[in-house]
Length: 212
Image 1 (cartoon, rainbow, N blue to C red):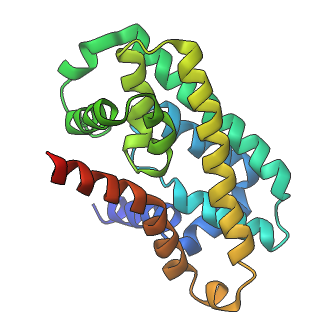
Image 2 (spheres, rainbow, N blue to C red):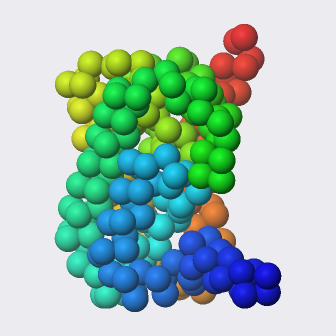
């Protein structure tokens, strides 16, 4: 049990702290970044993986000179687009059977229902907006596939959303990383950026509740 807890703490450190993410990126380079972005956007088991914080720290690391900024954005944009495409076709193929799937360690039905409600409110633009919402970004392409959204329409939202999300978050990390306060308080900076990124969704949700 102690060994298991130790492994869990290591995983928590590398995935959910800026220092851990930075160490993981420096060790794994582009490959680990591509794998995480693809898994979070394309495989529903990746809903717990970091998204915004990972991209922000990756941009920060690029600003320190350890990664090439343009290469970083190109490969991660492709990973995000391909990930959503895989999620769409899984949903399109399996269909509504996912709603009857029992809960497990890597699948929570409530996350699927939450994303479906999000999709009902925002329609096709969910594919873009969901990029900035944890968990929802994992299940949004799945729901779009289940709903049989026309693929050409899905693809346009997917490409724009994937590129915009990656460039926005890595760009912030790259630019803000040059500020001494950010370098000294990376964890606080990440939390502030994540809050700002989901603020439009909070406002939209509040407006929706108020009108309802």
